[in-house]
Length: 522
Ligand code: HEM
Image (cartoon, rainbow, N blue to C red; front, side, top):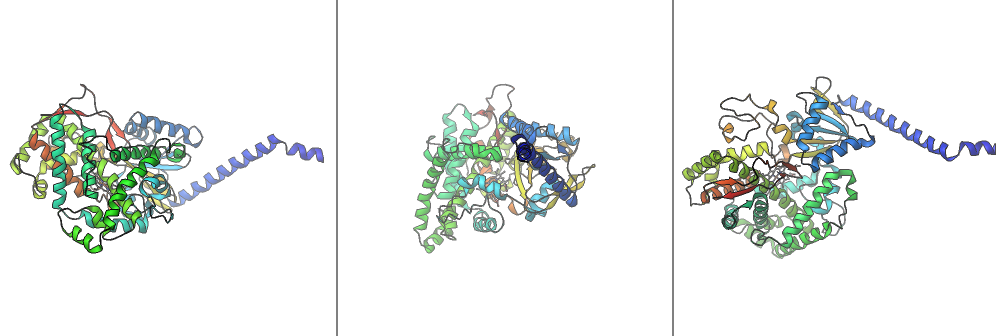
């Protein structure tokens, strides 16, 4: 009896039993969740993984990202695993994840089923150190910024910030004017520029001026402590966001992440302290006067919670800075590639506002060709190219499932749904057939907007639904103003990239050129 027991409990047996139990548990869990999904709806095509936990799929995703080939990778994946015309797929990387570039599904996630989907806990944790700093010391772990929150907390942020973006403020134009003049003088001094670098500095200066009332001056003084810290925090944050569940491996401390965040906090705190030293009445007076208006003073009039103020300021800075810098860079790249577009834009500028006067809001709104250039840029380069939402409950996606790809897809609570406006907005099947008045969708052609309006939900660079970009009008004004001022001063912009080299698509958090866009203004 003693002998028997010891044989049965020897290490290999115990190990074998554990493996069997694990495999049995894994299979039964899988069958159970498959059954639950089927109760809700159909399945989308599945990209098979041949290694456990989808290691081969994850490897392909990371490899493509490192080579700036994410877009090509997804196009190949849809084609290989879904067949023609289908743009929703399931990929397993340890769990079920979906990716979609289907307008109906994007509309559901962002608008019609808004309450079923959110940013989710993982996203919040990944971004917590940067955007949810809890500096009020209550250590409740709550993020307060608009970017990472869901539900009531998000709603509170949106309510707080929204009024600051509804008005066409003359003070915004003054800020753009001040910084475009510095930009122009920098360009005048440079025979050739790295466009993205210049635009990053310009939009950081304008954004800090708008938010805090004082610019960090990075155009004039390239090595500013704040600009470097902000750059580094974003760099590490984008690695954290990209490696997903493995992000605990990112050596945040060694990469200076926390130091950078402390620098950002110290900098922002100085301004918050000054704002909080003012009485409610003084804040009100500052906010009522258009001149000298700052975003910080306006929101400090509603809340004196330091953590809330800090999180909103950093969130809006993050949301508003790279987005406009990248879009301006893509637009300037295309203007440098086609002198006829620049000439036509300049003609419109001359007719509407002349070569010297500062453009007003009315001028900018009446300049159709300028708007078409920005629309066309955001069509080919929607600046948030890949995004993700988590299902907050058991639900569905309206289309992409079943053999015909038209059935609703069953989605269990906690499933990440990736969606790509970049892939969707480049889908030729969503456009009219090319004709003399409608150039092929892959071409950069602002004229296509003369007599064409995209079908609903096929063009959403600012997203849509309740969480639509709150800074959309501000961004369009800033970018329009910048282009008008640049092309009042300069007649043309020449491309100085090596012949035949294309910028490539580098998809970090925002979509930026993978190569330097070198140009010369003349
Ligand atoms: C070309 C310019 C811009 C584009 C294409 C753009 C696009 C977007 C997109 C796609 C989102 C949704 C992100 C998500 O929910 O996951 C978003 C959100 C947001 N954007 Fe923009 N954005 C631009 C410029 C700006 C500017 C200049 C500001 C502020 C000054 C700004 C402030 C925000 C804020 C605060 C949110 C969060 C809104 C919320 O969650 O309710 N954006 N933007």
